[in-house]
Length: 102
Figure 1 (cartoon, rainbow, N blue to C red):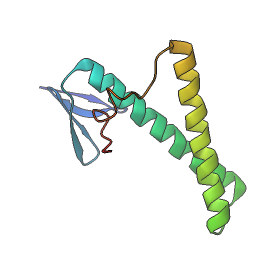
Figure 2: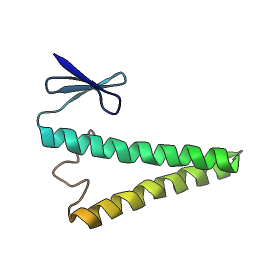
Figure 3: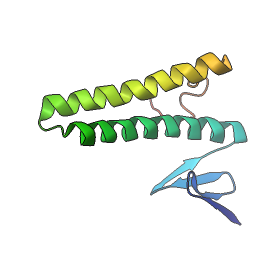
Figure 4: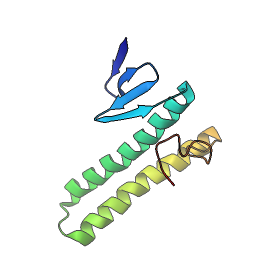
């Protein structure tokens, strides 16, 4: 049986299918952390797109500024969440679980 949600994609048991990617999610906590990171990433992309459209940016330098400013919006949001919750959004413990490879 699967559940559908517009914000998360399709979920089969402990696997989440977002767009064309499959992400293994062993625990509910890992799912929550993964989705939190994805929402912050989406916020940055949304802010960048809005700035680009509002500024009607053309050329590499203005587009780079839009991307930097959009990323700053997501960064400030992450810091605000951490301040309010008293816990880091991304930590050494959950970094690899969130789909990053470093």
